[in-house]
Length: 313
Image (tube, rainbow, N blue to C red; front, top):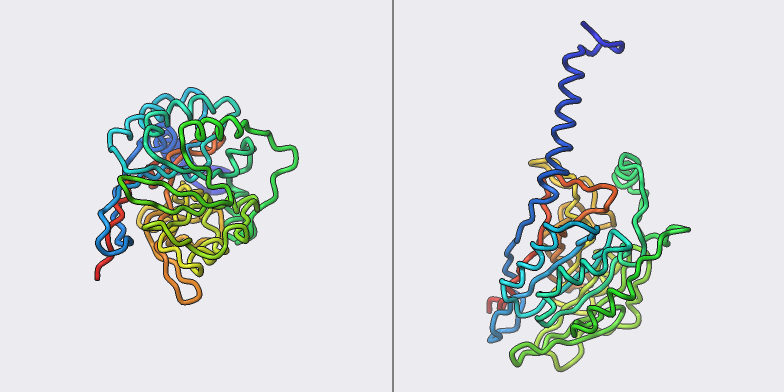
């Protein structure tokens, strides 16, 4: 028996069943299958002791996500030297207390943060097919976007105050520094380029004299920010935002990055070149999703323990 358009009904039913099974897997299992990646980056000056940095990103907390909250709390058992939070902590106007609770044990360690667009504004319900089409065609978000008119205001001020009270450095278009076991780490951060809040001119000029090591921190890895950090001589840049592509094709990879970064560098460690300089770039795939698209496929949620090691002579 055939359907109206000549496709056997049993084939149509099979496709529907496969799609349903994929949705159940990607929303019910993989999106909650939290992982820790470990990466070593040979980036420190010779003779400096290795340092362990925990990068958390794109938590997108929705009230009631208890498994995610408990997993984040458990990361304190790694005993990192310091923590870097690369933004998009929220996906719910009521999520601030749960983010602060989830990160509470980690805020016992030195740390720093930048915000992403979803910290400032609540998510909007969008057509995923239209989003993918715009991304693949290169017509969406390539230079960042103005905030959506009528967007919901998230209580990011409360989140900022909680981080600041714990002693974490706010890197919003500014510089900071952490002292860890007698070592000074210089940090230069930007506000989110995805909504054009980055102001590199306010921090331009490269690492300042004094710190033993310096790095750049930004939420969305737009090329203009990577070019600026690299041209200024930062040996390492940390970012998030991409969700690793979120919905990936096995053995192929990501289809989109939600910015102008190429899909080959959508997550993990890579390098970036600008004006004769080369920086390491680490992009976290993050551990959450927009509340309206709570699915992941071939891209499990993650945090990363980065071991910064001396570069080979």
